[in-house]
Length: 204
Ligand SMILES: [Cu+2]
Image (cartoon, rainbow, N blue to C red):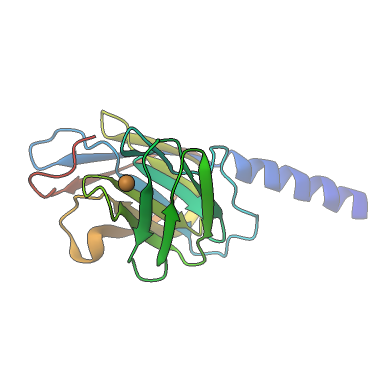
């Protein structure tokens, strides 16, 4: 009996891991795809598995720019800020819950900051006004960034939850759009959002 339950539990968790292929398309008022929108699905049921992503938790300073422009990390992640330039940078965020300041004086110097609260940290440099980046801190594994066509595929989620779209130039209360959704148990699912972007947003 115990063996059977173990097999059943394994089958259920495998089924879960391949639950739904959710495609979310984000377009502007003219119907054009919006790139660099961050889409998260947060299940109503608590996420119990550790959240890990396979990209580096790092925002480098290179050629007087931050790279990447938008970084997604889980709550509790420690993000490194290596300075790859010959000039110094003074990296900071004043965003609520994610305030920090790092003075990076030299080439190849690196410091780090741990982000303990879900949200968005707008990152700037005190010395170079044009430097701008965003760190999106999430408490769900179901997250992705829209491509040039405005689409993103989020796999593995199922059931009821909240779908959220954030973009640095989004015109919306709280800077994001939220929608309650119930995903099917399996198979493909589609959702779409029409967003309004601020004119003259950061080009990337
Ligand atoms: Cu700088």
